[in-house]
Length: 266
Ligand SMILES: Nc1ncnc2c1ncn2[C@@H]1O[C@H](COP(=O)(O)OP(=O)(O)OP(=O)(O)O)[C@@H](O)[C@H]1O
Ligand SMILES: [Mg+2]
Image (tube, rainbow, N blue to C red; front, side):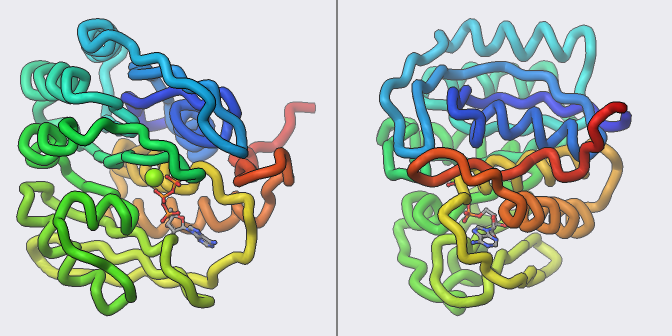
């Protein structure tokens, strides 16, 4: 086991996204997952029934408890829920986690459309958290919300990613899962240039948690010492295989098979 990842995110009772997807991904890719839980969701493949926020101070305490003892080689943030939590997370990052690579998945909505971040918090996210990110992993609706622009085609992604880089994140991985077409394109951009990752689009309704899974896959790769390009390539391959092996659970957006690297103990 190599690579300690501190996950700062919300719980998905359905087990397909959020902290549950993050822990499974980090574990399946050979790392060690610790968590600071920001919210509980009562959720399944069909939608989010209810959300219970964890007080901001308690989120910070979970982070400090982990960092002061077990330590972390990377940190991943997912659903943060509100501006108070974002502010508290930033304070811990600035005081206790400088130099640890930070992957920010700017979660704003669940796959079914339910909002997971209040509108005022988007400004706090932009001004406080994004400048601390080693890599930011928005999907297209999130990129639109953060930049005010529109992304309707792969050709629009370069400009949107460049605009996001201007928020202060050191790298942006703009995910193209929400576009149509038989190829799915993600774009990685840094100050040094950009790189396109393309793969076949898998026709499936079982894509709940693809975003959380990708971001955690990148985070554990960085924690294990992979460079960013290699971490993204491995995380994308892991997600694709997990979609292909999806167990077919639930009546809505079903979960992935996170365990495809795991061999049952005999
Ligand atoms: N149908 C698909 N086939 C192959 N890869 C996919 C498919 N859908 C998404 N991906 C990949 O999954 C990753 C996550 O992208 P996506 O745009 O779905 O994120 P997201 O909207 O944040 O997901 P979530 O709804 O779980 O938060 C990307 O690498 C994307 O290319
Ligand atoms: Mg997402």
